[in-house]
Length: 145
Ligand SMILES: Cc1cc2nc3c(=O)[nH]c(=O)nc-3n(C[C@H](O)[C@H](O)[C@H](O)COP(=O)(O)O)c2cc1C
Image 1 (cartoon, rainbow, N blue to C red):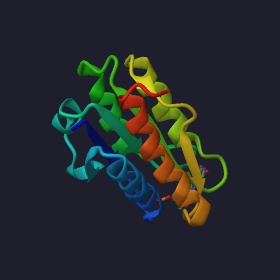
Image 2: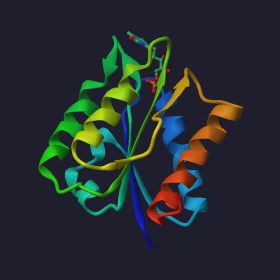
Image 3: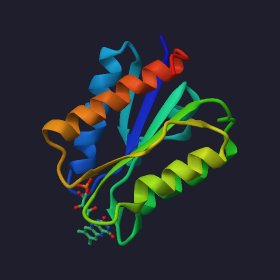
Image 4: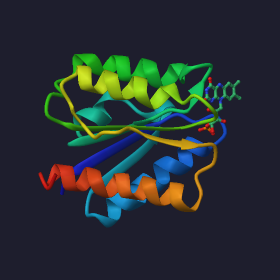
């Protein structure tokens, strides 16, 4: 079974809601999913995965320093060809997901476009978009798009 690692930071829980909805969508699509807050994650989680989804809210026009640091540490791994996705909750400008998306691309990953940004707390349609991203990751791993 193909493996997805979802690793995220969250201040108030909104990006965490996104992460859990992505987990649900990916699990329903048949992926073996590991979900961790960035504080509990290690680069080994990424090494073991076929796809990674990295989430961070935007604070002061940037990603959470803990998440950005984690993504920087991935530079030393052989990630070329693995599937990547970036997501995050935001209030008004939402830079974080875009920054992570670019970093994953710079590692030669097969990054799903566009990154997923949800304003404030995901509800209804926003939760569905997150589940859909989980499904899309599964499809990309099966080379279906
Ligand atoms: C101190 C602070 C700074 C913030 N700066 C930004 C910002 O620069 N751009 C933005 O889009 N949202 C900003 N936000 C809003 C958060 O991104 C938003 O509340 C988001 O839903 C938080 O996600 P989380 O619950 O996963 O931490 C800021 C919020 C706080 C409390």
